Image (cartoon, rainbow, N blue to C red; front, side):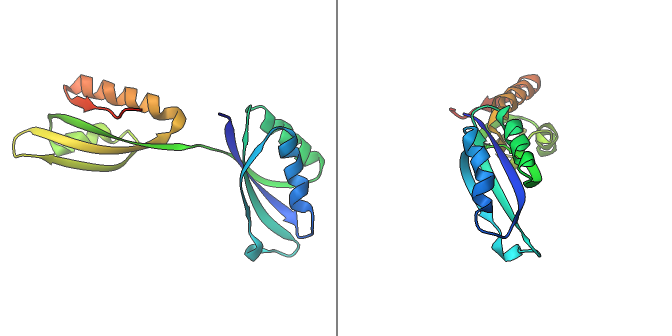
Length: 158
């Protein structure tokens, strides 16, 4: 799986300009994932166009950018696009709700649900979000946190 990049251009509002900037991307093995051609935001003579492309090698993006600049293409922005993964874990242990919040505060928590009786035993359902690259690291940090505090961690099957 390659790396995805979002490239935003200011293209002259004339026929063939989009094709012109797509050719170097294709030549370097880039796979076009999406194109947003913002016709309703037409300026005086330029149209903003965003292209998301996936390249088999991270080094190819610099070759493409060099080629685009040589052609005189107006590249406004280039950024890496990270694919996100969502996962849900359960944490069981003796802790107050505020302790769970403190422990989970450093992670990418998108939602948290706490249940339990009036005793100290609590069950926390945690929805996490991370880039695909970071999922393993995130789970490792969560395991360490649970081990250090005597919690039981129920992990998803990946």
